[in-house]
Image (cartoon, rainbow, N blue to C red):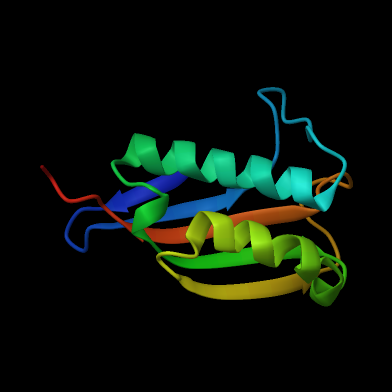
Length: 117
């Protein structure tokens, strides 16, 4: 498994679910907002390494533990701050569990490769 795969013919970067984890796979923050920022930071890093960026995101899937509606007040402003200018397609999904009991959010993305300059 990998954090992302680049499909050169389509110029798509498919990024697996990113979460707020440290190098030892421990969740770093206890709040939804903190974990969302950490997941977006990891997403930005993975996209950069793949030759893309947050500006190239076409679609996001946001998985939130519990009822999605309960976290929207925290998530919408944060997502707007990071993705408001590009307005990717967004799917929010409330789930019963994620990879660990401490994890509250996971974000996956579809992006395109950045244009060569």
